[in-house]
Amino acid sequence: MSERVPPSDARSDAAGSSDDNPTPHEALEVARDRLETIDARIADHDEDTVEAVATAYRTATDLLEDYVDRATGTGKENFQAYIELEGKFDGLVSGLDEDLPEYESFEDALETIDKRRLSEADFERARDALEPAAKYADMLDEREAAREALAEARKAASKRLQTIDDEIDERERLLELADADLDAPVERLREPIEHYNEAIREAVRAYRLETSAREVFALLERSRWYPFVTYERPPEDLAAYVRENPAGEYTIPELLEYADYSRSKLSHYVESADELKRNVATQQTYLEGIDAEALTIDWPPGPAGALRARTREYQPFVARIADEDVVAALREVRLLATDPDYDRLQTAAQAVDRLTPAERERLADGRVDDELEALRAERERLEDALAVDDPV
Image (cartoon, rainbow, N blue to C red):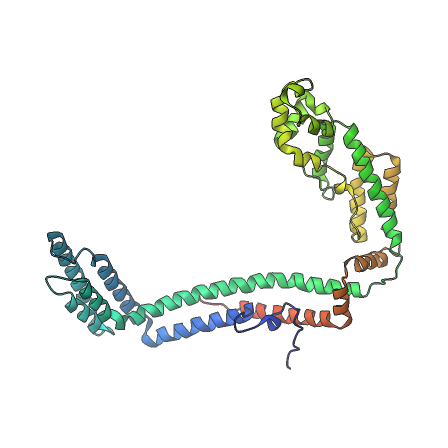
């Protein structure tokens, strides 16, 4: 059965393939074929033989490279270097099996440097003589490069596989939202949530103006036990200063104001102007960021279970910060999760809030279904390809 061709905006390997930009699956297959090809070439020449010739070739070229500057010329040191080179090169060739492929190349190179005085041209001729043996070293280099390319291709395929599930989840979410009742009365959720959010923001603003920094920090420290209350805990040095120094009795807005005072003016308010500036002035961004957002309800809200858990964790913090009216507003939000219509209204709220005109168009013409099918097919191909046990 032939596969359906996915639409161009589906990030599938069938959609993104081109000669210049292969998909992760294609790149993996190409890398695998490349390694198999060079392995076959090496096997045809016998791997032990290839490695023996390659090792001799590399040793010979290294010797030439090492001695080209030292063994040319007429000085005593040059002559001594030449003697060393000739002895090492002769030892290399003498140790080779005469049946080794390209053995004559090594003999020819030795003959080229077998003279009392060498020039750079002699070294060049020796390298040329060794050239027939270079292909054996090239085969090993190619195999190493092919192995590295295969490892990189596997890594890229694995990385792509990790993102496919997210893309599948996104398409599935769109399809779920497509079934939403876009005419549902989502204001039944929106109005209580907006009322509570406005109330808690105002309450926190007042709380900051009236409550000492020490008391605020104590409340923030408690949030570590409440996963839904996402306040950032105070930096350690600042927390210690507020906890132990009399300046901790000031409110956060007062501390921020004092941090801008001159040292002489600040000395009328705190025991150590330098200590306040060191601890407060350097943490202005953190202090200014202590607001109500960690206690607000997102729009659209989450599933009913998450909303119940969130509001339950918010309750002791809201009760500490705000009056009974705000606590009652939070209670009204919690009761939303018990409404039999909550799931329908929540799904509709998500659809209205999140579906863009382009997404609605893709849903209407079936492109999202095609994209989902293509992504699932790509995932299956990549999983099969990665299941192959490649040589290391």
